Amino acid sequence: PGEVCDEADFAIARVIPDMLIVLDRSNSMFDDGYWNPARDAIYAVTGALDFEIWFGLMIFPNVTGSGICSGLSNQCEPGHEPIVPVGEGTAFDILGSLGAMVTCGGTPIALTLQNARAYLDTLASDDHPKFVLLVTDGAPNCNDALPGGSCTCTNPMGGCILNPSNCLDDVRTISIIEDTRAAGIQVFVMGIGTSTWMGTLDAMAAAGGTGSAFLAEDTAAIRTTFEEIAGSVATCEFDMRPPSPLADPMLVNFYFDGVG
Image (cartoon, rainbow, N blue to C red; front, side, top):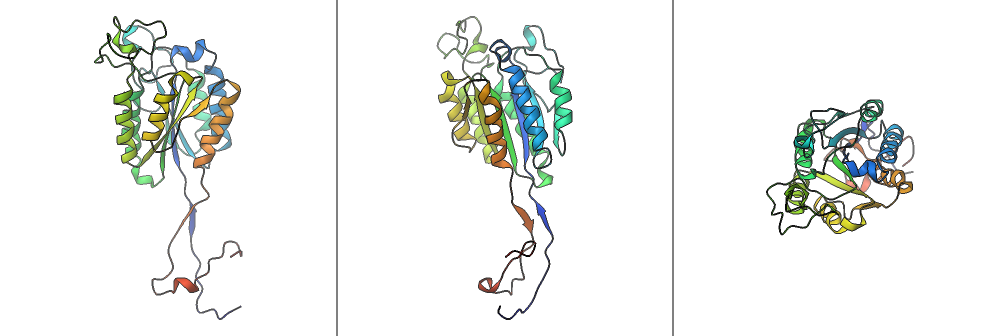
């Protein structure tokens, strides 16, 4: 060993990511058999990574956190705020809140993500990297301003002329995701049984800075896809102060638990 000129101990702290799960509870999630497997996957992943990732949960459509939404006026209500705020050890709260939810309504992704971004902006002081995990079995809609007679219709039965809320709302959604990414928040997109809309979901994921969308084509793939996404943000990074500015970087060694 060479001569040791100086030694110093460093305080280190694990970098904890914040992940807001934004879950689609539109009726098709139940009709196609995805609702319970999606909830079970969320319970398993949040329980396993409860202290490595700070999780929160937002749902859409939503009516001020109610477990039940009914009536035509509620079908396109976006998620306004998390039903479980992002925090440490939230798996039990997510289990309790999500277990009471039923499915209903359409797919108001754009305004829900806009509200998710506004919420995460309020957490800027915690210095955690921020992520949104959007989970949906469809494509964004619920924009009455779109032309029902000429839009791409997300309802397989049609009906966009009478109800423009069924029009594909991709342009507005991607714009909101781009703004979210510009604010330093990455957006993952997980599509459940959504191969028909993968082009749209891939464009959304690209705008969110996470490459392509993740596809779970059947119920068996839902949990493994959740695990893959969550595992990709669980970090082994640590914060530490730098050495003295007078130190020669070619002559500095770092040791962690005695291992250099």
